[in-house]
Amino acid sequence: GKPRVVIIGGGAGGATAARYIAKDSNGAIDVTLIEPSRVYFSCFFSNLYLGGLKAIDEIGHTYGDLAANYGINVIHDWAIGVDRADKTVTLAGGSVLPYDKLILAPGIDFVEGSVAGWDISAQNRMPHAYKAGSQSELLRAQIEAMPQGGVYAMVAPPNPFRCPPGPYERISMVAHVLKTTNPAAKIIIADPKPKFSKMALFEEGWAHHYPGMIDWIGEEFGGGLVSVDPDRMTLTIDGDELDVDACNVIPAMKAGRIAELAGVTDGNWAPVNAIDMSSKVDPDVYVLGDASQQGDMPKSGFSANSQAKVCANAVRGALTGSRVFPPRYANTCWSLIAVNDGVKVGATYEATEEKIARVDGFISQTGESGETRQTTYEESESWYAAISADMFH
Ligand code: FAD
Image (cartoon, rainbow, N blue to C red):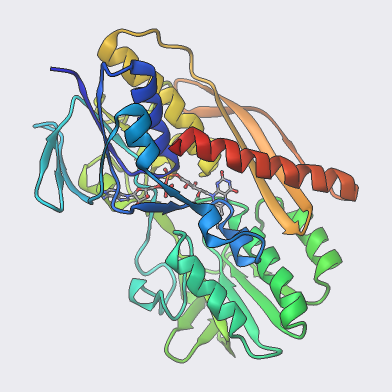
């Protein structure tokens, strides 16, 4: 029969890989995509939803086109086990799927105990909103329900994590909402890092658009020095307890649990070969996107999409003998600081023996004109439309 590829996770990495393998092999490869959700809400642009600039439907994507246009077998279920000796995947529903090549793109899960006082059972009181959808809607409702002059808090994550500028774009969008609905409100960020992505750009933008509203407390405090109490709605930093009205806890991250169950992680992440995203421990298993440990690329949707195309080309080559091109990787992360005030950072990368290595890059400058910033924002809108199509249509 035909060679079989099973892909676990229908997000940025997995959907792209499925689409490219199926599209470019014209039916020569049997492609199965396993994803529990019928609608994928992208984390990318979920901050714009929080800021009231996008509707939730605008960041939701379905899988019908992948099935109809490319013949991908989309199964809405959880993968609960991988047997690498037998080369099978077990689903929660009980099915066992054989594979010749397995692609893991499960995104992230949270490291238990990384924020004292918080665990996943507290995610309704203190949402992470770091997987988009109902968590994003909940956080937005909590922002809207804050009393006048109330306190919004964020516990930011340690490196490495999904979307390095994501927490700070989120703060910008929360401030954008509060500026009109609740101008006396305060925003506090407890950050375990001494600095963060595009820091100078965010700090300039916050001082300009939201003067006096945002207090970033960043330092190398260990887990012990920041804690939350979701029942009492308090945040404690270095012994100072503070009442908070909304609290976004973004814990430390690791590869999605199925990567651990498949035995391809090394601690928290899954090490891969830069040439094709294959696992360092199994040449028939590939790991894409946030779950992988590949080197210099940030964990982003753009990166996951870029990695998926390299992987798809390599997998097709291995299974059908089609031509394999040298890998090329790229990323850009846009962030919105206020309406039409967009900034970006990006780079290109190459595969070395050791890792995916940065070649060169670019970043927005402080003091840029409003026109430049608007153009940057418009670029991000075009990017979102194009990359969504490249993943799901
Ligand atoms: P995901 O897209 O999370 O997909 C993983 C999928 O796997 C999920 O759909 C999940 O349901 C599924 N899955 C997990 N476990 C299983 C299992 N056992 N069985 C079956 N399926 C499973 N990136 C950008 O490029 N640009 C941005 O502007 C941007 N903004 C962001 C803003 C925020 C607030 C956040 C949180 C992230 C942002 N990102 C952005 C990052 C981007 O969302 C992630 O890097 C990207 O989604 C990673 O893709 P992935 O395929 O690794 O994981």
